[in-house]
Length: 54
Image (cartoon, rainbow, N blue to C red; front, side):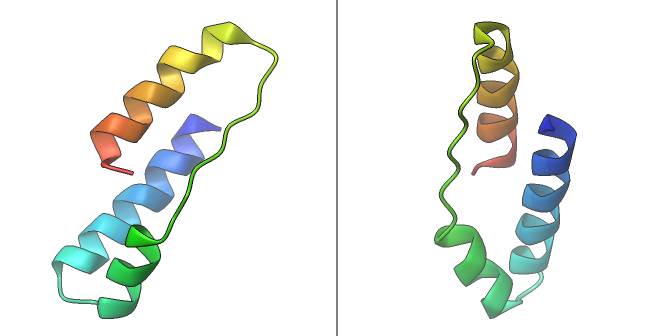
């Protein structure tokens, strides 16, 4: 799951940095909500969010 989030976030970041205004808008307006019963997943999601600048 975190790999999918990372992949999409990276795609949006790269496209936005290349001048794609639609990708930049989508990146800026994206809200990530994670609901999990496994507290062990929290560090993984935090790492992905911070690394990908979501």
